[in-house]
Length: 421
Ligand SMILES: NC(=O)N[C@@H](CC(=O)O)C(=O)O
Ligand SMILES: [Zn+2]
Ligand SMILES: [Zn+2]
Image: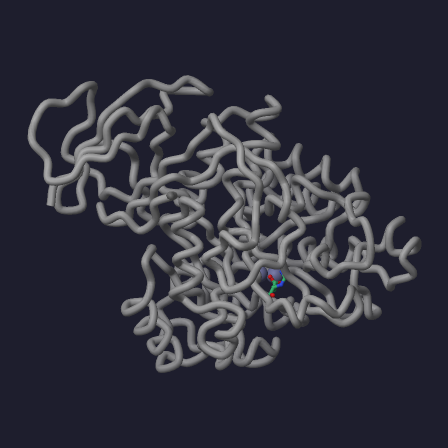
């Protein structure tokens, strides 16, 4: 099968683009250039849209096995394709938790059969995510280990996990949340929770565990990666850790970069996620942290829940929002269109930098590279609408937002896995 994508625009540097055709044969890019001659079995006119290596989202919940009413590996990966995301990493807070080689292999089997994009599967740090017994890390050959969904509550367990992961040269990825500081909180402890009369979640719930873990990472030498950083003090702790030479990295979500507690209009669980939307000052610290390299990249924490589950208000609904279908458009609209970052910077933080941090293969737009590609329409706007989602769930406060940067086409291994109508 030979395919030519005509009249795309690739990034040269900053925000500068140049018109190119891209030829793909047997899943590989075989030519890039202007007005390329030749006969091809299939030709697609990109009409001046951006063509770029596919995005990587290192933090998603695909809910399989166990919670397939919220999402499956099939629907989650279709949603990824619609977002221009060609590689994802799925969290292990499934049922069962993949805490044995057999349970882990069972998920790999589903991925092999069902996934339309590249899906990596995390293994947990402890059995049942319970902070007690470490999984057999050498027996479960995952790219990284995490208990995302819950924090590792005891320092001793985290220390032993880090020692083992360091020995295997694998990262420890941490959802940082000290349960003893939670006091039943459901949203950020700030202004809005008082206005709405809801119990708050302190910033130190997160930042104190990050501080603990950075010290443990320093003595164990492990690569320690922090999920969904939300608080100013957390950014400061990571910045200081990096300065001391600790192998610490961090991610930030589009929702924590774009929203803060002031944007919560009323008691609606569409605004409920963990960690919560924090103060304006926290939001600004996250943006600064991303811009200065303290936070290494963007990940969505795509966390689908059913409409029924999310219709129970802040107190009773589960934490989490979807994000994989809208991450590029939201970030492009709010940060590149407004001049706060270049397109080059954004794409690196949604692709190349993620690959660098986790030592994953990264497909550049070059002859000889595997054709994992995304095409984005930067010129026209559209309204984010739940009826368009390929995800089973639509729980996000961004429904109704007007954005630029719709994904028009996605290819994995040279095959079209998403094409906008
Ligand atoms: N982020 C969330 O609010 N929820 C996630 C768990 C998590 O990422 O901590 C989920 O699994 O629903
Ligand atoms: Zn988490
Ligand atoms: Zn998560």
